[in-house]
Image (tube, rainbow, N blue to C red; front, top):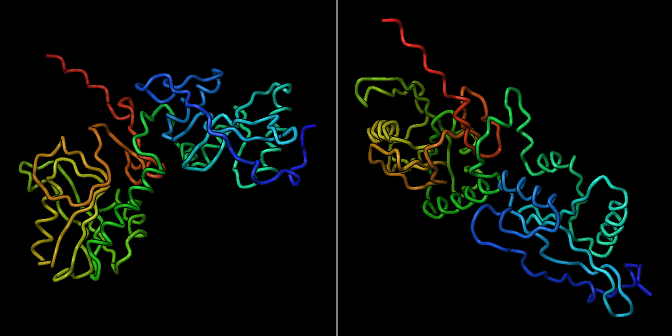
Length: 328
């Protein structure tokens, strides 16, 4: 007779069983490489891919009932999200399917209390997004169709910033530094990076005014200078993005005149294909293509800064129609 009391099941029997890979091809988007049992699962995988949430399809099965010492029934959750340590079982509104799945989920939670599992209806997708950190899509004047592709997810940002913080801390071990942020797109990056740095530091800011000038050196001016004296100090200039290098070259030239002991650059994003001036960038978060990007402090007309990821903005948002030519 199948066992149903979790307390009577020996711990050694409760061993998840790894399942064979359902991978059918090695190229293309992740949701197109796997053989799914149901179209709704592929739809959900496409949904996860869009938001750059890593997933595994049916990676393990959990024994949930036994006949003697033999496993009589197993439960295989549809998805595992490793970055959130969460198992997902999809379902529909059909009660004939919901009832047995609810039973299996309940057994799984009783037998494996350390496992985080959730039964997910289609209407729950947005709640899952909010829990994973993507709920900020619901902001004023932001339509989902404005967003092109998510390039860097919140988890990727957190992981990379932790690595940058460790490297900076090693490089400046036994010293102190002055972090100089270039306003204002750098705000989120500088705050999160500073939390990962383990050596003493102070924070200061520069604000720049950019305008069209005849010569490169006339295209940017400092309108808010640093308050902290940097002569003889180790300075780390923190930028949100480096493009042509003209702005960065100007700022580095101005700061070098103040004779810091050292001067290095950390940037969240780098577009080396746009570089026109060679500038030294010691710490780089991510290299990105030439698309217009927003989120995590980066804006378009002051919008989108509060997105927790970095994504491209569709050209239709910022491309203005050409004005008709005046009559001859």
